[in-house]
Length: 94
Image (tube, helix red, strand yellow):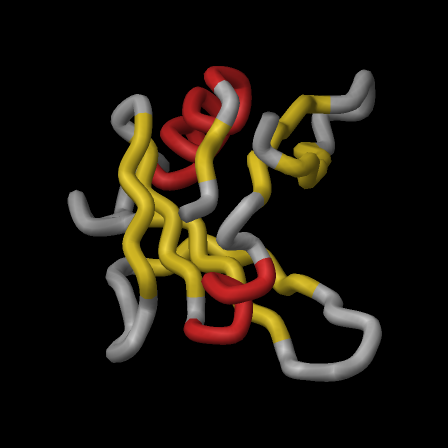
């Protein structure tokens, strides 16, 4: 199952605790089943049917079925660049 670094948990918490979002809000990661998988990341009010839910460090991440399979052995990290843009990175679990 996907795991989150401490930084990723903190940033996901910050993104999903914005005013107007539900308490069930989380970061949703989706992917298509193409040969070169690409991931789309967005804030979501709640999980969609079939989503895998990852809760870690107070952060909630929803993964669609394809993303859940592709990210099963990965660690999600995140950082904020000097311009204030959030950047996500993936690594293999150690």
